[in-house]
Image 1 (cartoon, helix red, strand yellow):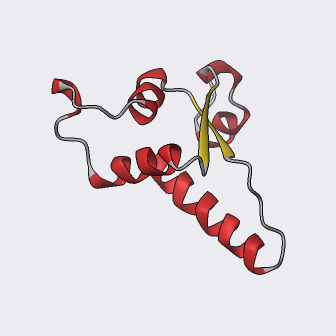
Image 2 (cartoon, one colour):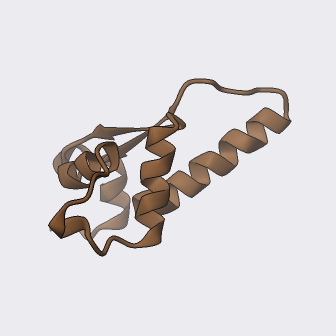
Amino acid sequence: MGAHATKEAIWLRQLLAELGLPDDDPTILQMDSQSAIAIAKNPQFHNRTKYIEVCHHFLCRQVEEEKIELDYVPTNDQVADTLTKGLN
């Protein structure tokens, strides 16, 4: 899911740059997976990350190039989850 949001953020950044509104600061993506954030920030080889899909490598590259910044938000604090997941 993070790779899809990253693609959308990069597309919006490019659109804004073409409209004359470039942004040099990284776009902040909020995620609830601390392990995904750790892997993206430190993509060195690990046994568990051996078979990561190509889309996750794209996310890692965008973090390295400082176009995207990942921020941890606990699952219970995510406002968007209320709109996408069933209620109890």
